[in-house]
Figure 1 (cartoon, helix red, strand yellow):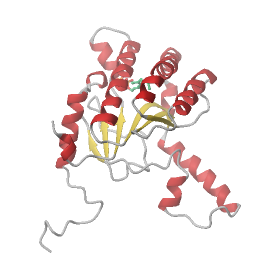
Figure 2 (cartoon, rainbow, N blue to C red):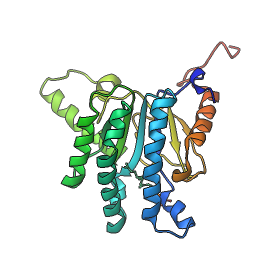
Figure 3 (spheres, protein in one colour):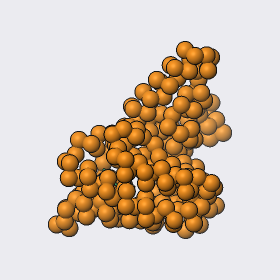
Figure 4 (cartoon, rainbow, N blue to C red):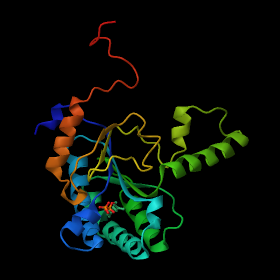
Length: 242
Ligand code: FPP
């Protein structure tokens, strides 16, 4: 598909969902689905950031609430993150993709934090696109963490006033708004993902479980985005009588 000529979202968000159900459908353990999801994510993110014109991709891979899952599942996911960040850092570096993380460091274990810091450091000068892993991330926590820092800086005279532009600078990263938000697996919820950044996002909810959400399915999503009429609360008077 000739997507280069079309209206392309600058910042895309993906709420990764359906790994567990994908595995259960095949009579396998949930961990099998997470492994398949992680492999798909690596391939798909490289496609999105190097071939489609999307500049920033934010992916929700572990929410602050996911710590409520069984110890076995949380441990498996943490091990998977550690392994993948270690193994994939060279590929991202070569593809000129910069990796960043959004979320709280506490209570992530030292071994996970170490691989996160290493991949960030290794790719920090890359300019071909940003892959933002939202890991131990919560939209509420992000707003609270920003508010605490703002309170401190207001008290100390570092800033004098607050508006949307200033507030954004206190988030985990000062990224442009999410234009297009995809949640796989047929669930219609935002689940505490990038609440500030997604305020005017277009939403898309494919039925596909994440491990099967491939390049072709992403192209279909982009095609749908190009048909949306984004007005940001205004009215396009060229198209309407007034
Ligand atoms: C939520 O749905 C998915 C997760 C909590 C984990 C997502 C993690 C990955 C894809 C691995 C990412 C790997 C790296 C290296 C960042 P679910 O899969 O629990 O699905 P369910 O609702 O069907 O149970």
